[in-house]
Length: 171
Image (cartoon, rainbow, N blue to C red; front, side, top):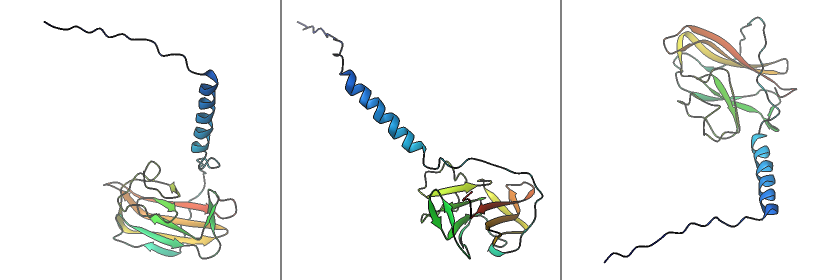
């Protein structure tokens, strides 16, 4: 003899609309705060003539997948409201801020889950050192300049570029 049971589904009672409204407002406030971490920054590029610099050697030949700290000789660079007297240079085309060092094999600094205080990426890709390649840094005219010389994408052409940090404007 089989016993049969019936399941009864009842709609849930309506919630308090005031509580629901407060929950929505709280969520919107939290999401605005979470997305405002570096709200004062935007991508920019400029046209100009590339002018190579001389300065402190951060990496000389043989630098594939490396990280080093460049101490700013004078003053600081302010990023997201915090003044730094150093930047951490990753040979894979970017710099980071804060006490956490990026992985030497990190190729996606902006989307990385690593908890550094910030990142500025010119390339953010697996780069190799090529013939006569290096990374140098200097401070000149109120800017901190980090320069990659003859860096190569995997099996690619040699490239030169700079990340320029304006110490006056923080950009």
